[in-house]
Image (cartoon, rainbow over all chains, first blue to last red):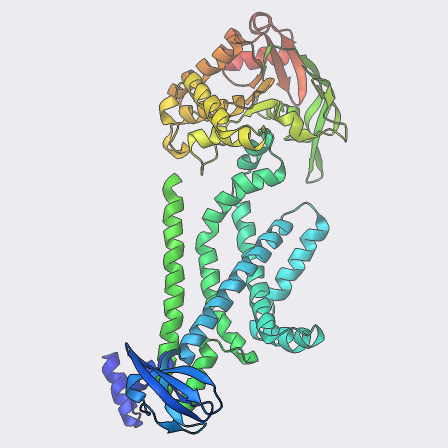
Amino acid sequence: MMGAGLWIATKKIDYTWRWNRVPQYFAYVDESNVPAPYDARVVSLTRAGGTTKVKLAGESGEEGVFEVDNDSLRVSENEDLFQGDYLGSTSEWRAGPLSVGLWNTLWISAVSSVIGMIIGLVTGLCRISNNATLRSLSVAYIELIRGTPLLVQIFIFYFFLGTVLDISRIIAGISALAIFAGAYVAEIIRAGIQSIPKGQMEAARSLGMNVSQAMIHIILPQAFKRTLPPLAGQFISLIKDSSLVSVIAITDLTKSGREVITSTFATFEIWFVVAFLYLMLTSVLSQVISWVERRLSISD
Amino acid sequence: MIKTVDLKKTFIGRGQTVYAVDGVTTHIKQGEVVVIIGPSGSGKSTFLRCLNGLETFTSGHIMIDGVDLAAKKTDLNLVRREVGMVFQQFNLFPHKTVLENIVLAQQVVRKRKTAEATEKAHMLLQKVGIAEKESEYPIRLSGGQQQRVAIARALAMDPKIMLFDEPTSALDPEMVGEVLEVMKQLAREGMTMCVVTHEMGFAREVADRVLFMDQGKLVEEGTPEHFFTAPQEERAKAFLKQVL
């Protein structure tokens, strides 16, 4: 029903679907001509698989071997060539803008997740420490980040910090995402640690462990297990939020999509594809985390 | 072994000052089994928790093997590894197997090699009678079994003294016996023990000395025969009338 409705609706506005134009933006064959670098004579042609090796002997004694695709070969043996004449062409597969964008989104999210996790862990521990300074610093950080929009933070990181500290857009983007995620992770970790019964810490301390040993061996592993579901949600959000870095001209998936649309006008198709690619990334992450959760549940 | 001098612990809450432990002076000797009894809220658990520094005390002194817990330069972690503690709620580490529960602190705190720690753990599990459960997670064990693992875990650190904080209060009645049996065996082996309990039978049978606490004060102390048959203080008489 919905599909039919959409089809009729797009029919009405005379939209021509061009799904066939989408694949080339993932990967395409790039052909480049191979010119003779100097005036020369073709000494020999040797076929090897799908390519032909063209051996040239230059007027002034240069020698060289060039490889071109068989079906693009334009010269024959003993032919005299001028500099710049094409011998043929080579073709190779290249990643299209959508693949590049997907890859960028993937690694930008991954790097900022890892940094965000570290920031969150440290802040979460500060948040529950006995040191009043650390505690209020972490509260200030969390409130500041949670209380302002990510988009504004990205602009501040790029236009203000980027200019003042002379950092590149990619570092500005990743820092903004990591620091944003860190504030939320900190609260998740704090809640996780506080949900562990006090007796666990007391038992660990009564065995002679100091606070950090007890944290590392007893409290954090249990807290980690409990916080996995909310952490998963947070990192899935981070993948989606990473689309905002396109506003500072980082070529992530969203920006690539926009670029492809400007050259194809296949607006509907590309946005669907972009949405699907985000969905793929997030569902892979969901799967991985639920696998870890199942692994950890053996002690339940 | 353990000496407390005028030990005081106060909680301040809602404008009221509660004297949880109010001037307790006593001396637990090497190899002695001391049982602390008293009504709920009499400060016996708090007193016990002060002995290994889980609770900070307000004033007074605790000397363990000549080390003063009140002194600033005392490293509580060093004291605690010599003082084993068994809790009412067992407090086993739920994410670790029975064996790992016993091995972990030996490795982390005593820096023992895995083989040595594992051997020790096997020996102790044998002793408390649950050798066959070593690869189970605590949740799959009954309360009595969990508490025996907790005892083995504390013993693995080779403590000089064992503190028991109501070790049988959270157990089903039929599991109480197996835990008390392990504790009696420890007592026979000459372990110095300080036990907070409501098990009067255990106190009468095993204790060398009984301390009776009420409202944070040490009201009466003496041998079990003396305490259970001819208590001097009115409060102790009233308590015994209720529980016996």
